Image (cartoon, rainbow, N blue to C red; front, side, top):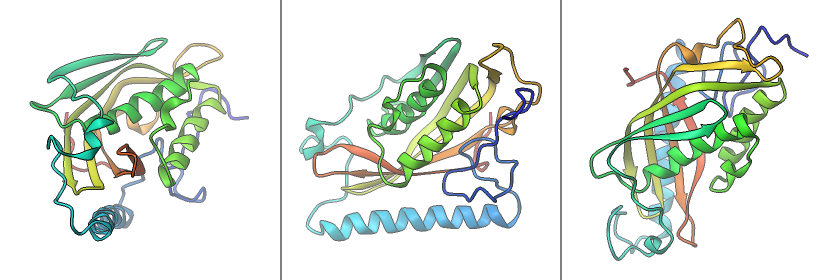
Length: 234
């Protein structure tokens, strides 16, 4: 068992356990060559996902998030409120979401994942994976277990901002946001105190992207999660 003075070893989803040990959350390590490879992989994955969606339904028009006639609207999430919103995660943790003007309902697919996965760490609730599938479900489960298996949790305030849908078709979309966790602290659940060595992700914001797919039931589900240190400033 690891000493509680050290943060738990957490590998980025999709990375081997032989990967660089400095990765502290779901964010991939982004130094040097690995950063370029990761960004190319994300770009290629988005292109392939959206192309596949288009080929599967060539007669469909490109996805329009607020189109009234969209068949997904009967099960779509309600549009979030414009402006800042603070969500209580539980036991000393909150998430501040800075919604853009006229926010796309698809943004909630990513913010709900973020809030749900952190709630799983803090309270043990396991509903975070209900709208996840394929690689993303495995990624999120492994990330949550990295906390629970080492008796560690989170306290403080996380900030989600610069939310936007960067690419979308009828059945595929990429959803992006910036995450600032500098006001979060990793704590020991045995002592309730912050661990001595705080992880890298408490020092600077990072970019989080989700590749989502709309199923035949009209529900959008996350299929993959990718993160890096690019494009985000406080």
